[in-house]
Image (cartoon, rainbow, N blue to C red; front, side, top):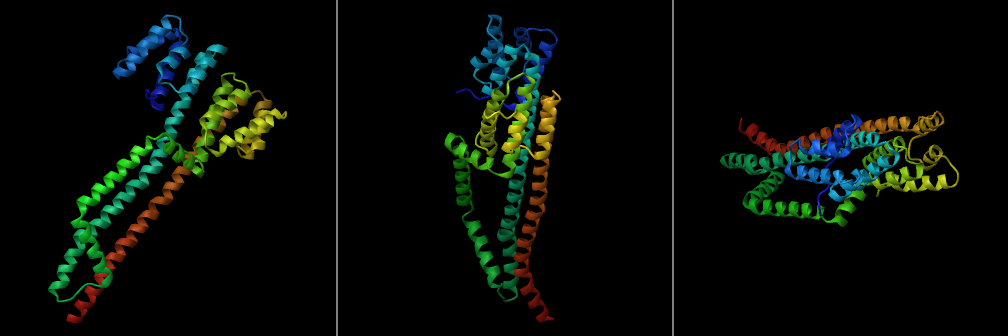
Amino acid sequence: MKNKLGASYLGYFFMELGLLIDAGIPAGEGVGILAQGGGDSGLAGMLEAMHRQLEEGQPLSGAMRQAGRFPEYAVSMVALGEETGNLDVVLKGLSQHYEQQEQIAKAVKNAVMYPAVLLVMMAVVVVLILTRVLPIFNDVFSQMGATMSPMATVLLNLGNFLRGHGVAILSILAGVAALLIALGFVPRVRRAVSDAFASTRLGQRIARSRFASTLSMTLYAGLDSDRALDMAAGLTRGSAIHKKIALCKSEMAGGASLAQAIEKAGIFSPVYARMLSIGFKAGSGDAVMADIARRSTQEMEEGIDRALSRIEPAMVIVLAVVVGLILLSVMLPLMGIMSSMM
């Protein structure tokens, strides 16, 4: 099974191809120009194969589907652009869409990686204190003919255990990490983790941002409301937004407009719902939806920043408390001994 192209590459690909087509260059020739641009040999080979298919009369969407590396959403949108004669508009919209997806992916990665790095640093500091610092204090107590406090002794024994079995512990941790990585490639496990994340507040904000972005582009490309919602549902699967989209379609089947259905389903806040309703009445629903998508993405990023701003000081405080308790368990008895000797 071929690996799907990443959002970063897709953003550049659709942007460049859209510019070439907008300049009057046919899609086949445009893909051929991109294939000559160098870069990864595998990607160049894929583009050359697409170029040959396009020169033989294959539509761009068909060449993308045969390549097997483009997301189904992108293929469907390109087919829609070919069907409506708005291919250049769709390509530019796809470029913006995948640039936004890359932005979301980086934001989520930072939200996960930053606390993980802090946690590892905390663990390293605590292990160094237990295995390197406490033995020094133990030698000092021994030279004075005294023993450390019971808590410090327990921590010292823990440090000695870590020193004596460090290789085995690291091997176990490496094995657990490898197992978790391997499980990440199992579709059922990956789907379960994705569904669990989608139920969080951050996951819901990301789904709302993707929904707004997808709906904006599909409406701009001339897609009808039902098909636009179907495409948006495909990109928010497993989230609370996905269930609300089903409710939205049910409301539309009952005669409600898209704006009314979105408001009744509670997908957006009342303010955004009113904006969308006014936009549709003014004939600029796609432009208003694009603005809502931009605002939703900004809210998501702000939510991630707020979460990180709380996590960092909390973890620093925890580290300070842990290190402080360890040192106090040693320093207070030592100070008592030194004061009695004076």
